[in-house]
Image 1 (tube, rainbow, N blue to C red):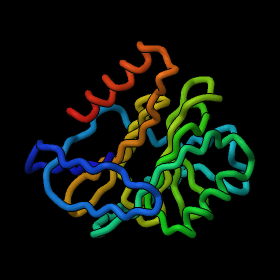
Image 2: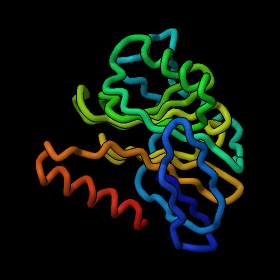
Image 3: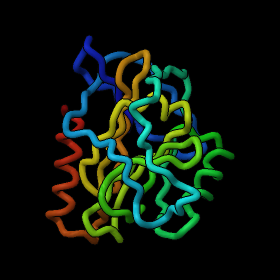
Length: 201
């Protein structure tokens, strides 16, 4: 889910996230704002990244903040089923580069905790549970979109929000991993209640 927010209007402008092979055009004014705590702790997850592949983004605050505006952005989602295998992140980023992806949401990364780290020129933000090994979502930004990153909000192991600075205002990108019908009814209701409340902010 993608939406804009600025100071002129409170009415949301949302877009359905396309598949990997589609472009998403975004225009318009107004939008929802995303509240909550933001994290930028430079944590690298325990699994999926070797020291030669991933590094914490401790120099994030030193970066010059860019305001992004592109008529078209290439957005995709991918259920990776796990990112605990060593070297998988590097291969994934190489594949995204070959597809020209700007923003990619990942489901079921199975990392624990939340954090942010770099893989080459890409920035990865993620949100998992306390134990890891299940669920977990992440968003990968290419170098241009990473430079426009304002903050991110790790809601839980199924919902992650990224905020980008653009000339149209704040661009909110929400990555989710929805529970299936096999999950407990309470878990399903909690997920959709959290998502609905987030979209209303």
